[in-house]
Amino acid sequence: MARQHSPGYPSMPLSKAISAVQKIFDADRQAPVDRAVAAKHIGYSGQSGASDKALASLAHYGLLEKAGKGETRVTQLAVDILHPDTIGQRRAALRQAGLKPGIFQEIYDRYEGRLPSEEALRSYLLRANFQNIAINPVLSSYSETFRFLEQEKAFESGGVESETGEESETPDTNQPQGETLFGGAKVGDFVQWEANGVLQLEKPMRVRLVSSDGQYVAVDGSETGIPMDQIIVERRAPEGRPQPPMFPMGIGEAPMHDAALAAGETEWIANRVGKDTKVRLLVSGGEMGAKEIGKLIKLLKAQQAVLSDDDENEDDE
Image 1: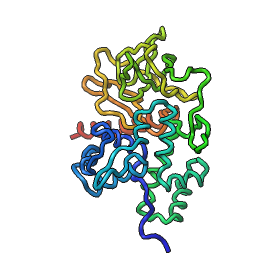
Image 2: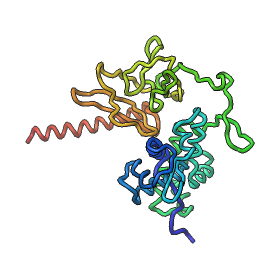
Image 3: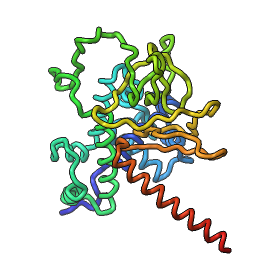
Image 4: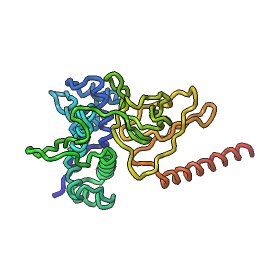
């Protein structure tokens, strides 16, 4: 007999869950908090059906745990993602969180670590007793989470199995243990800036420019020249893919970070297109290549044609 309710699942992808738990951690660290307070931290006016669903999603990923009657708190797994000691620790924690929901682990195992087609996944969920109303949210959450884990290289094995079955990091023979290597950044790399032992960036940012002498770099949304010897490369740009063009920011122009980037988003273009008009293009879920740029150009030309028609109609009136 089929279930009347679908099995449990997160209603949001992992990247959004991480952004939400970051807000709770920033406000109360790992202290137990009332669920109503946690709901307010992530943007709700108070506890409601919608906020309960959002908090449940964080719990599905193992980012929140029950701390008492009506209370919750940020887990150590979440801290390992938000503030890891090493890149390897973050990737391992991301993979653990991404496959924490039972249905996500089942899908991952069934399709041997590959992202199935939407049709195949939809059919599998129907056979797994998911109601029609739940299938699209599961499809969206799993697909976005899978691509996010791929982007973060969480599926790549960076270590060996320990006796407990948990993955441990394999020492890099080219890097002394416990020592952070600075410099060597290239355009497209995601980097952190450390000065006087303190990290200067809220999160790793993409290098948009390297000075001709190789001594300084600039990151997306900033005109500041950062000394190369204070740069830590957190993630290399994908090999074999063309890098998007870099546009210097106008002299005296303030960085256009009007809103913080969500997890998995990259600011691809930020520039002024008129005296009082700025444009900011965000990319998520993949890279911008020649094919994607071609589609974007077609969309912009279509929008230009619509606006031109509107102008002509106004002139006729």
